Image 1 (cartoon, rainbow, N blue to C red):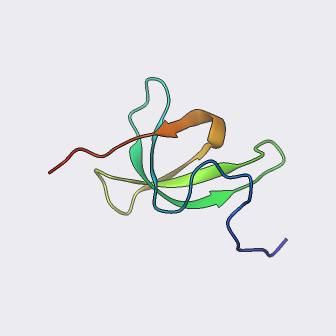
Image 2 (cartoon, one colour; image 1 turned 135 degrees about the horizontal axis):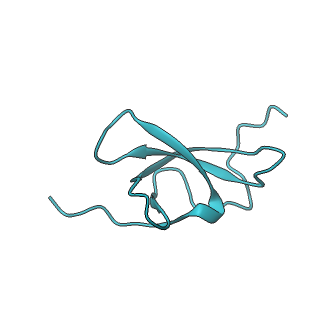
Length: 70
């Protein structure tokens, strides 16, 4: 599949902020998405605190987040 459009079933949009649920502390901006055989929809999140560092998480593992005001 070579469709670069944003998924219609996405609960987050490019540029929105999200955080890993639970004990992990990864927080940042949505910079992409992915699908695999085991993940219906996942997101790439660039760290708010370590710019350039990206982690990927299934949609079910993240929640909305608001960055602190500077």
